[in-house]
Image 1: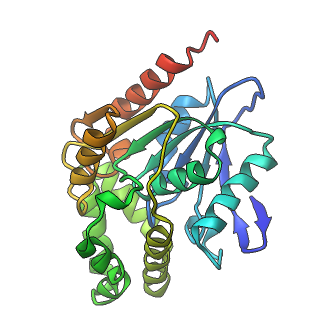
Image 2 (image 1 turned 45 degrees about the vertical axis):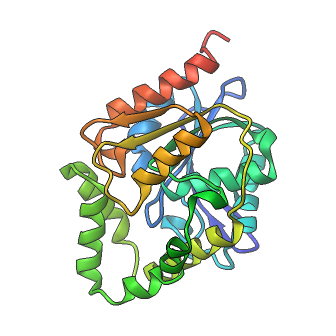
Length: 266
C-alpha cells in the first residue's frame, strides 16, 4: 500500500520479485478488486513480477477521493515508481481496460503489451449519443434497486460459474449502496470525460467470454477488432469475468500472447 494525496492505494505483488523479469500489471473491472485475479497471480508469479491493484474507490482503496482519469493514471505511475518498474505488460478486465488506455494516452512508452478481457475501446467512433445518455444516468438507475437484489443481479450477469458468482459477491460485499452508486457514476463520468481517439503502438490482444452479456461489451469488442485488426479470442465456458469463470483458458491465452512477443528465454 502507498499513500497518495487522494488516499491510500492498495496493491498486491507476487511473492518473489526479480528486477530482471517482465512485470504484468492486472487491472480489475468496475466494483471488483485485486481478488478477481487470484488465479492469474498464482499462475504467473513464478515467471513474472505481478501487480494487482485495488483501483481508486475500490476494495482496500475504497477511501480514495477526488477520482478522475488524470488521478487514476498518476496512481498507476506512483505504484510503478514505488516498485522501480518502467514498463509493463497490462491486462485490463472490463473497466480495467479503460485504465490501461488512459495510461497509453499519457505515457505510451510504459506499455509492452496490452491484453483486454471483456473490455471496450477508447475512441469517439464506438459510442453513440444513446450510450452516453445511459452512462450519465447509470448511478441513478442503480440507486433505484434494492441493494441486495442489485448485487445478486450484477454477480449473475458477470459470471456463468458458481466460482465466478461467489467471487463477485465477495467483492461487492465491501460496499454500502451509497458507495457503490457513487463509485460507478464517478468512474463512468471519468471515462466519458477522457474518451478520445487513440493510437496504440504496442501489440494488443482482445479476449471475451463466449457468454458475456454485460451491456454492449460483445458489440464493442467485435467493432474494435474490425477497425483495428487486433486478434480477438473467445473464451469458452465464460461470461464477462472470463478470467474467473475459466482461468485455465485465459491464463493460457495470456501466456501464449506474451511468449510470442517476449519468449522467457530472452
